[in-house]
Length: 446
Image: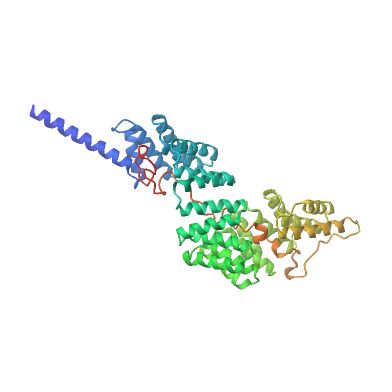
């Protein structure tokens, strides 16, 4: 009888140890594969544990391994078992966002906020989706919601500043960047963004000062070198501009903007072969960027290859139909090919556009002049040429692909492209939403 009790105790101890091990593995965040294995034992009923918790934790592990479909499946199951887990809704929304499904992501973030109206991380993630869709007012509203919960969030002020930037409200953007810097003095990205805005305002001295500060704080910040280089370019300091573009390429060889900016400056200098190589690299790295195609189109036109120029301009206009410099360039290329009607059609479209920048207006004025001239059938089809270097088509500097005036100052889709990725949990310092694996459904986020 004694032997029986000893055996039973040993069995219970072994069973308890296995259970504790599976649960510990499932709850820990250091080893994702071990977490998945431990959670799976609980989910499959081979070890004791909370199934809703195990599905939630396994979903987190799959998310960080990049298997978003598996993460969504586990969050689905976790929510079936525990429908009021706001963290699971937030996390599933983050996985949907990673899959590019912002509609479902927004629905999940909204549900998480309904369950807990002060859920800052869900507001942040939903704002990120709204920003990705260009719904700046909705994004700003969510950033306001975060600041009601936590008024001292430097990153939230920074993100809201980005939204104001894209809305075109530069003064409010500057105010938010200033607050972000006040709360986080080493915020290099905020300095860079202020540099962009001062550059657009024509305050080059302050723009350079902001870029310098960003570079000092983050010496490997390629975009800050590009921004400062563009200011030098606008000031006519080609030597410094090329040095900054070169530094940016050295730091980040796959940055299409750096290659494109350098190519455009070389184009202006009449160094067409070097410019062609740089523009080609920019297009190779970012084939869907209309501005790089526009730059290469003008280079090809200057080199006398009007056929390739038309191809580049046409693709640029497919991507960005209102790109004035591409319309002007293609019209010039058509002229050189002897296609009067096609050239006049492009000039006419450009003449009827509402110019958004000084560069667009200059291109439009040139188009109207050519259109009037070509209305006389006796006018020869030659296409105006500049008397400057390389025989490139005449177009004012501010119409160039990398001029802040023509590009709105943004050298990336989101200044400076440092929007944080959706976070399933953690990063905000909220209680119950920090970097721990156990589903924090029972802990209130403060």
